Image (cartoon, rainbow, N blue to C red):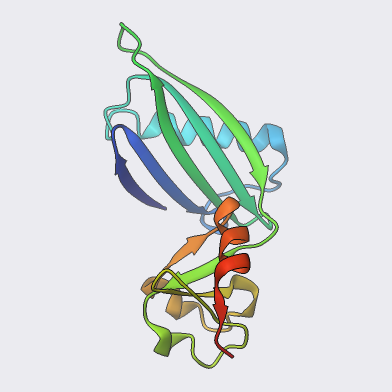
Length: 148
């Protein structure tokens, strides 16, 4: 799992579910899993208040969460509103063209290079980039320049 602070009591989580014992990622199991995981990190991240958790799931193996603080509660409790969305397209993003130059359909947009995650045949390159999903994908497809 990877946790990134986005500032202002907001966090981004990346979870590869292969490392957890989840048999099925149905909605009920996923809600329980996310809430339990966030409660485990409550003290490490000093979470207090009411948070919205945007949860994006890609093909039952990757979960991306954006934890956004909506309200400060006046007492030392934490609560979550969890919203689950399925991801149809997941893009790998990097600023190093050389590591993805062998792939077809490389897109250049805003000084970054993108390829569809499904095209990656070497998972070692994942450490040299990040993932893009949701509304950003449409903008990249519409405004980006295909290089090959």
